Length: 255
Length: 79
Image 1 (tube, rainbow over the protein chains, first blue to last red):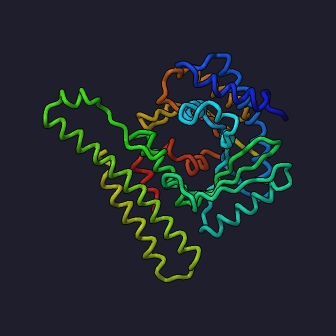
Image 2: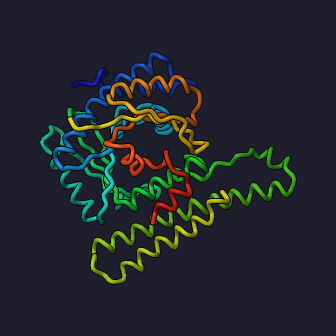
């Protein structure tokens, strides 16, 4: 199965998609054709994972809104090199040793393809708090990103993504929460209203900081758990994650 | 091929809530429905339209809970 466009055609499509205010119907149609091919390759890759390691991942083709958002952020040329248009997600209900074992198995499943899989360890190099291990496989030459997450890594990622829905999606890229007023509107407010929006904004900043802190604590506990699984202090360490989350829960009603 | 279901979700980020969930037996049908929904909600950047494949809706609740659960519920889930 071959993509309906060459790499350079996909690159040019990406550039056109972010020119002007809205993509043309013809370019969206072309993008849909590309996504359709990715979807077929992904379905077969999911079967290989299921047959190869007995795990049934969920899968998705990246949604068009997020593709366009990322093209605007990274530049249209990025479309040709995007590696997560097609993706699977596996949540591992063991510790990091189990996570590593699944990653090794996935590398084996896709190891015979002409282009070998690539492993990206975002535990060692987290992105704005996000930790996981990603395996990029290349079935039929098409990149398929397989996210392998421990339960904590996964639940943190979903929590942060949902927080981004509330306070602004830029936080996923390290940006501050969005302001919902302009400087002119702020100056036109009374002092009480100014104080109220300032306090609410500060709560949002603290909620982001606290969520990021939770990721750090999870990382430390998971690392220790993998290194010393029999440590009698582990339960106490795990409790430290809940302490941070308790602080976060107290902030959420005030967002 | 094993039994996989395909789900079209239409999610409102601002409201933090699902507007629509539809189930399909065939992935291509879900993708077609996704593209149609993208046309329907064109110009609404707060609307996220996604087609997901999973063995069950319960699996989706685990791996894509953000679409189904509130921020508080997600924080409570993480223990």
